[in-house]
Amino acid sequence: MCRLLIVPLFWLSFVVHSAEFQLGLLNNSYDKAETVLREVRLIKKHFGITKKPYPKVIKTRLLTRHTRARAYELYAKLNILRVKNNLGIIEPPNMEPTTELNPIYTYAQLDRLLAEIGILKLHLGIKEKVLPVEQTSSRTATDSYNLLGLISAELDTINGEAFTPSHVFAEAMRIYEDLDAILLRLGIDDSTTPPRKRVDDKPIDTYKIAIKQLNAIKSIQAGIGMTSIDYFAFERQDVTPSDVYEITQIILSEIQVIKAYIGLNHEITRGAKYYTGKMPSDVSQLMRWLYKKIRLINLQRITEGN
Image (tube, rainbow, N blue to C red; front, side, top):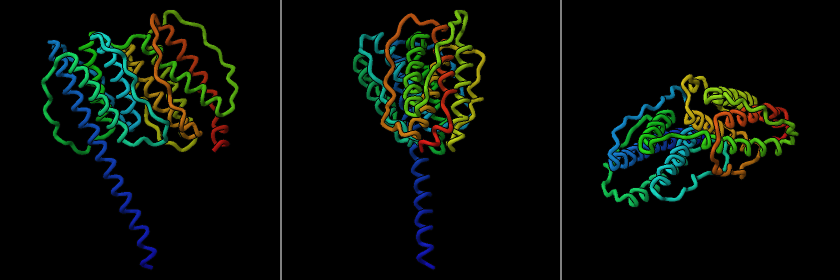
């Protein structure tokens, strides 16, 4: 009887310690993001910029994959700042798809970002150091996501600009490549064609299509028993290209889960290519085409392959 009790108690202890470890990593990721914020504000001070940022706050339960997606955004904005200061563009780190993303990857991504910020500070001649961050507790992925959103907004004040439709188009093309890989893996014939371009489309029109994409993806995830989130919190009326960029990163993070589930574990999403001269209508056309592709993904094909 004792031997039968030892195994469950052992695993219970393992689960408890594992949960504590995960919570610790969430706190560490938040603290690391706070350090990034302080470094970015040092750069802002160096340029004598006093403009205040007004980031949009998300109020829903997010997952680690979403915070990592938001951190990717910071690399893209850091690149804008690097180019303005005669430094070359760097490739944001990517990784293999996984169904459950460990918070340690967000921590590592932010640690790398700090290294890149250190190089930029050296280039700008900034010698001042930030004060150490006090350790926090009970932080969630949503807390980190919103803090990263504040950093993103601070970078906009330094850059004097946010994302353009060309930046967003580049990210939408990453979604395009991922969806093609999924359809090929599932043996689904893609007979879709690009819809007609609507020259009067604005970022809000593209954003609405992006929410439709997320809801379609959520339906697929529910069918295979995967955790998803409530995208209602992302719905907005005042939409900028930066908002559309943000939502493309959420879409990419959700697609990674499907890729991992169907065995595309080693199919790493490639970095964004460089585009110029794109208009909101170009982004809208591409995103409406992607929505067609998402709707082709057949739940039966997914379950048959697993």
